[in-house]
Image (tube, rainbow, N blue to C red; front, side, top):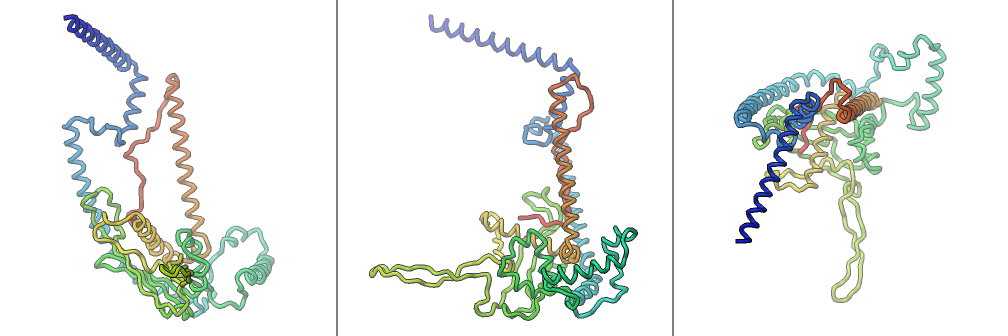
Length: 401
């Protein structure tokens, strides 16, 4: 009996404690609901939680979730229209690519000294001419330019006024782009000096493109052209349809390089020691192992039929490969001269600086929000970040696998 009384007393005390705590909660809720500043603060915090893994969506009523499902179905229909648009845009790109061909051929002729551009074709103002046209004497400027050409160019690049064409044009373009230059080894440079042209050949069906690298006769391999094919996909993924952002590379295929004897830079020979099991004697045996080289670009790893079977290393290699392929197709071939001079790189740096400034301004606004949170007497408008504001990306850019 005493045990039952003790349990009953403990149970009553627990219930009384719960009632007290509930009363405190109700009192707090009442104070918040009657305090406009506190209510505004709570609403702003909830707004910042929208879309995050905060349980906000899960806490919504079923009737609201039902409507959201309808919105998602509409979104999927929008993506299917976007996919059709991108397919037609690719066909249009293929059509207009033919109009670029004669211009690219003219570029190739000038670079490789097949023709010398006329005075009219060279009538394009330089940056120095834009900035100093009114302030500098043209004769003096010309003399300075001639001295610089004779001294600096001849010393640094072995060029002078007798130089034909634009030596090492494409190798310079590649070395000016970080994602490519980090793969160029010292033993690759003498080979890339023979790279005379790079072309993009677009394919309609199946959707894709081929990169063609043209080389002058050299001592390293017998190929005149090295190719790299990329296949594109332009339909939303069934498993993750909302990740669709336009055409994406799904696979690639290189070509065989016919290396001359002893000139294959993608392998290197190491000396490996072998010990005889019974005699115990040791001998040295030469063995070929893979070597870092830009020309590994033409032997990419194969994409397995089931993406789930792809290991992390292969996935990383393919992602980098796909990105390089898109950079060459979308940027380097169309704007090669601007990457040769470095002007395109300056524009990219400015874009990055703008993004950093935006990030800094966002951080400052966040700091201001925090200050206002802790100082309710400071009234004013506050900006909120929500998950709905994602990063806008060019749909033409490659989505890495």
